[in-house]
Amino acid sequence: MTLRNTIAIAAAAFMLAVTPVLADAASDKAAVDAAKVAGIVGEQGDGFLGIVTSADGAVMAAVTNINAGRAAVYADTAAKSGTTRDAAGQATAATLIARAPAGQFIKPIGGTWTKK
Image 1: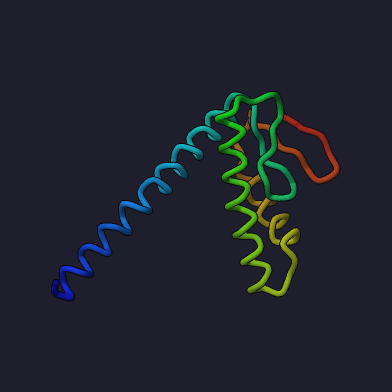
Image 2 (image 1 turned 180 degrees about the horizontal axis):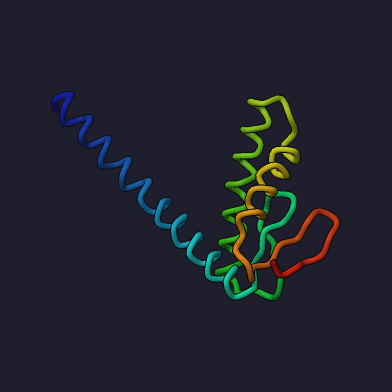
């Protein structure tokens, strides 16, 4: 087997492994976006998604997956910037809450769910 064939096979295997993850991320985002519009999920002041009202298993799983991804990003940002994960999450939350469209729910730290 040539080096070129080995690289091609490795690239194909990588794409097969990554494609389901990307598809899962896209389906999670779609589920959360729909739940935000329906008033089931909202943005919180800590940078994580929260459940406003009861949600089905698919929405709960999507929120959990997205929050896990956010936690990793906040931890990485904190490590690179010399701050805490909480501070990184709160800084991101300020942007996410500001960008939330009217009609969606937001929850500041120490506050309650409010329709924007």
